[in-house]
Image (tube, each protein chain N blue to C red):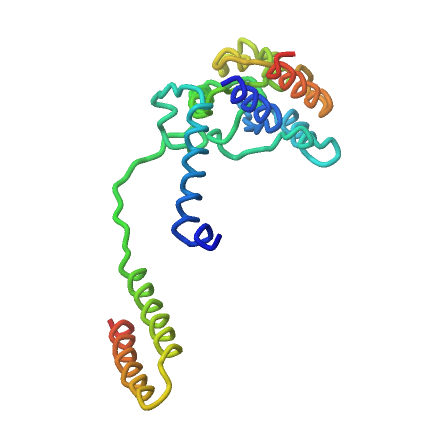
Amino acid sequence: MAILANLTTWSRVKSPWVLHFNAGGCNGCDIEILAALMPRFDAERFGVQLKSTPRHADVILCTGCVTKQIGARLKRIYDQTPDPKFVIAVGTCASGGAPFNGCYCNHGGINKVIPVDMYIPGCPPRPDAFIYGVAQLLAKLQGK
Amino acid sequence: MSILLSPPVVFAVALGIGLVLYWMGRAMAPKTNMTAGKAAPYASGEDVPMAKAQFGFRLFYSLAIFFTVLHVAALVVTTLPTGPLAALGFVYLAIIMLAVFALVSE
């Protein structure tokens, strides 16, 4: 069984498929995520591939503070992602809700609705910061 | 060696490999925690309005039978024996024409 476990970890680390979810941001972080996935920064060299459904994703990339309208939808999408799943909060709003924290129309950071594994701060974070965050997550998966 | 490449053996081997991969996947996958949200159809997190619908296969079956009839006719005509019996092919094609006419006019 140890061989199977090692094989699972290896395949998971080599192909972290991601779902991109904007929970209520201004699109600044979303543009940087797309830039990171494009050939200039090429996050795909780490096996990162953008998927269009949570059913195929291992990692949810969340941007923006969670608006009250989208909170339940984010939770449902989190539920629909197969285990084991990981959530990366991309940007300052996703990490803590600032500067919209406490606003009447949102919950705050992503961690107010679903558990978060990795925070990438920045407004917006640069693509290389995003790649560094993904590399940290992969290292965590490998137990390093 | 030829028996190993025969279709039933190849099919059985392919089925066996598929089953092994399936059981390996089941052994490696973590336990699923089924919730209402997980069981719901994916629609970007939205509720999917449910409505009963009945599929109409009438046109599909007409087309499917049309192509089946033509393919079988082509197979039969190309494998007809030579000689006086070959003339029977015209009778067969006449019946096929009737069948196609019935399908089209229906």
